[in-house]
Length: 123
Ligand code: SF4
Image (tube, rainbow, N blue to C red):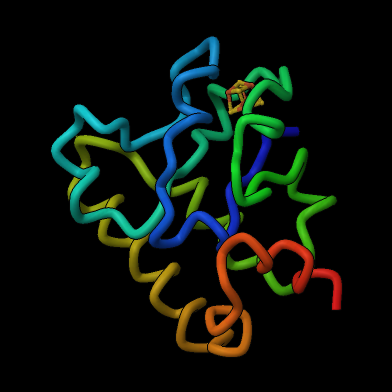
């Protein structure tokens, strides 16, 4: 079961997770052209080896350890992680559209500071 990045990453894009991931499955990296325009980072579900290294590295607790453990409020972002492919403009566009839809439908969560947002997921 792959790990999933959720909405505290939107606008945060800290990238500490990228630095610790042993299989380079979190994108976009800061050296990839999509970094500037992507709303958040995404985990490639087929490449993630479930090591868990990214979770403690994330300063905003954005990463859940499986789709099943991802809170209901974040379910749309499971698909965003799954479709995003760096270097594929169409895939990037689809993932970003899912993120924009999430932001619109969960304005309540987006109003919470990123560092506090994971705690709000459980409410
Ligand atoms: Fe990378 Fe491990 Fe996190 Fe998967 S669980 S995204 S392999 S650091």
